[in-house]
Image (spheres, rainbow, N blue to C red):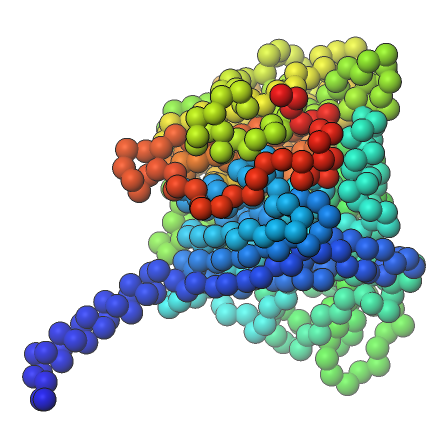
Length: 587
């Protein structure tokens, strides 16, 4: 049968619409994650540790903006585990966000659970990691979100790319170390090394032969996708004799920033361009700790990898050392880097900074204590070390908050997280010892937000117990704007005059500087239950966290999606079994 020209045009138009619809919907990807113990030999010793698919770091996921992921997690370990998709907004989809006792209970050993991950606004480098106890130490991997089909980067196409994932390595079982630290209430054990792509590098025992090497060709430009999954330490990063151009931060683009180093906190990700334009040789890539505290301690070692040119030349006896990497305690270098970040704010990548605010919160970030009977704990004065937001140490409930909220089950959380701390004082004073305002109130308190209201949070660092330090605060479910930061006590009259409401960087993790403040703004347009916490695992375990519940909007498209047919049951499947930790709420 002959088809008329008019019919052909109609068919082509319909086909075009179908292709456009398919492109808008994105591609669906399926993955299997097998969580199990695997043996690794590092630092002259072999140990068994929890991994995904027997690799450390775990497998990288690559997808395009607008795609959907289904990740079936088979837990073949010995205790419950969850997976979080760090920096992914998951619109109306809290059920698959991952933090234990917040949006789900742990996946019991011997069972599986499938996560649905919706990639919508994110573009760039993010990562996934375990979000149960301290299993993030070895259960993590990169999440690379490429531009949507038919679009490209807002910078010249790099010749190649490389993931660089920073992590901590412990000779002992990290879960046992966590359990002991929380049981006795003292300081946590430091890591034995850091690692780049799973390898400690040249400066550790029994490690030089396995140092990660990145082979490069002269004249080519490389996109480094950098992830900091270190447990408790901010890191400086530098490549000897090479400039770094930062073009992305936390899954969004920024105005290109050329530096000789970066400072990246746990929970942050960055996209960095580097051009191989130096003499053919070997150059060290170093990740070195940054620490601005005084009451705590940190692993004072440096992890290395090698930026290695291909070609015919005589290799040096030792790679070139980066003379421009800041020292461990260089507060000025850390602040200089962070405050220079700006959103791209272009036509293709616009910003939508709230210009007015419905809810203002002033949240203090503190290390605290909780009393122990008869002074029997390992913290100061026989008390238990704790941490808190607005002097509240968060306690995990035995039923996840999302389920309790959705099913209207009372008794598992209180809707009274305060908008300001109970006491106002000189938060950055040098003499806030243990006889000052140091005891925190333990509870499972959440903040309720109406759909679409605009929120401003000013985080105030404190020096309670002389323990001030930089805190990377991570908010699930949102991409917020960092509109301002500074040192000292926040002044609510003069400091807002310094806000950047034109092109502030968009992020999911904000560094709150030692004895300083940082202000973020966002629109509560994602109904559901969303966790906010310090991304130092020890501080999160001590209670430096809270939860936002965003109420449903007026339409079906602005309401929390219904739960999947199966969610992991809540029960005695976590590390501590029926014996709850001190930071889990007694019922």
